[in-house]
Length: 359
Image 1: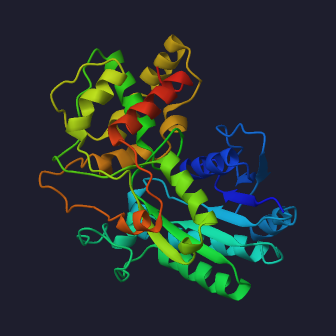
Image 2: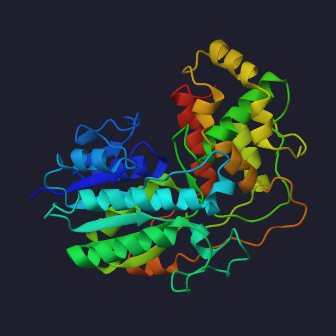
């Protein structure tokens, strides 16, 4: 029987990456999301409209899923403003209910073999205090409000009852092609650069204190989802994911500026989110002048401008505690893919330009 994977949240960053990885490997892919993904063009990808917050609609939609053997769950509900919602009880419960609705709807699927669940490094408590360095998957849970534990407990219980395998992946600062999503920096950087150019200004770094960071290319995350679905030793395990190196913004900034055809100016600390809210009209003029796809700023950055302020350490004069995770476990298990983080950012910026999302 041909393997069939259901990618839940397929219009998002990880969902798109996972769907592309499975499709390239020859799987039959069902891409499920509320809106049709615009970056999935493989012939073996079928779209399924799915609203996970509506239990009845979810059940009806899943009745059409015959022969699904694997699920990759990447859907997430975020509140406006992003960061403040991470500990919000409503957001936590909504994310738990979304996964619960899907698992209940899939209970009649007798072919289900494996589910991959996405978490992130918030699992290590970075939002409530310093993380251990490096953060390892074997470390005990950090007790703090978040939806990861709610979803993980649901999945573990359901998998035990229904006798299928599962894997949990924890990627760090994912970088990819999607615009209008909650946490992806290339569209934010591309729009910021376009606004600076239009104002006759260099590409000044807008962030705060210097620090080392980790990122992961979405192509690596997608391939890790495929690996987890097909690798026996990954069953029941949790894995961190990074490109395999650290970077600093100021070291990477000249390559980003060169990719976008700008010079690097002196640092100008500012909130990218606030900067964007004051320049909607300027952006629309840029769109018309460069014949771009007619997206508003909101349609391009989603909530990612708030994520940019966090990642750029806006407003900080002292270095935040380091957020480093170990990827030794997944490498020792056999998944050893790596990416150059600078090349990754520049690759996706060029991709955005080629699709006329940014000039």
